[in-house]
Image 1 (cartoon, helix red, strand yellow):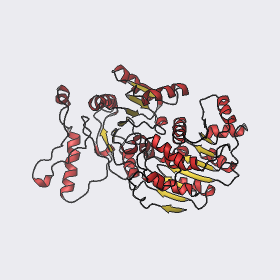
Image 2 (cartoon, one colour):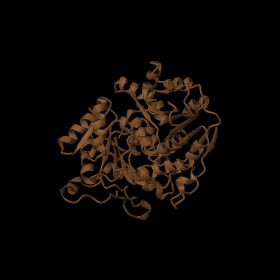
Image 3 (cartoon, one colour):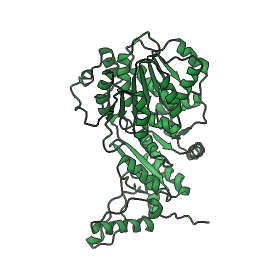
Image 4 (cartoon, helix red, strand yellow):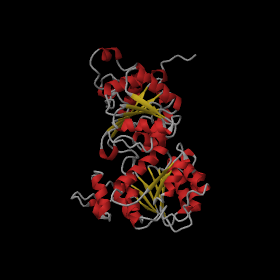
Length: 456
């Protein structure tokens, strides 16, 4: 498998950069109508490779335009009037709808039809979509396999197959379904794997189904985009909600997504936020598909300020105005962090991401840092989105004190008080080590901080 990690050619800023990728005029018009700026790095790298007919694995940070990177060349290479030429597999219903929307938007000048296939909808409605002989089919592996077994969907002559967010599909448990689908394709076809993270497990899956595949990695040293201000807050579990409420009131986000690890937590947090006067809704797997779609429509229209979500929404949630991400529960899978925070800072915008970390979750935080190859700063406890300032060192002759960022004015700041002694002591120890030219050990909150709640 050939691997390309070299930088993409610099973007042409004279307005012809998309044309230089080899796209035809009707697709250039679709790009213009979609109000895209210059092509992103993954788009500059991946589009020519797909147009050249090569199998490929594309890795890029979340929010950098991976969907358009495979959608545009497939739209160009697909012939109108021939059914089921392209199959796009995605892990969730929300991502399926998002990909379908992007394809129809970019292909607005092309007479091509799409079918959107996923669970939670009546299968008869989706069979009717297939009777229209769509050229492009987008769906989740489970529903695609179901329709194949019912003999309602024939993919034996597919020319292009895309596995979007393949890492998430493997996490969910779609490996066997994916293999069964890929083995069904008999025709000469092009296979495209796209994801924010590509590891040996994905390469092993891809190997039997690709030929001389090009691996494109434009993720560089970190898997999250640079214009996300990321950090964490150390908080005891019983103080999480008050911490969240203070954060939202101080930051006043345009749109925010609060991620929890369970459906029960999503419901509980949303109910408490509503009771506190916050304009919010929740989205999780227990909601009917029609209600999930209504919630997402309201969020995209900014009729809801805060969306409380499980990881269900961390893929395919492409809302450009999301300014803040809160990991109310830090994800147990580090890759989940990448996809959660990728819901902000889309396509060059800036954003903020804060994770609430309890004293026993230091290992989870460290695993996240290893994956994204950066150490997350500890944010000021009073919700100014700035890392703590470095403390004075013992070598400077002054007693090291924990510095904190600007405080909110008024009674809340006075009530907040100084940085707790347990934080100050940890910072003091780090300062002493640094004054002697030594690096502190990597963060493990479990040993660095202790809960203020008494054990029973």
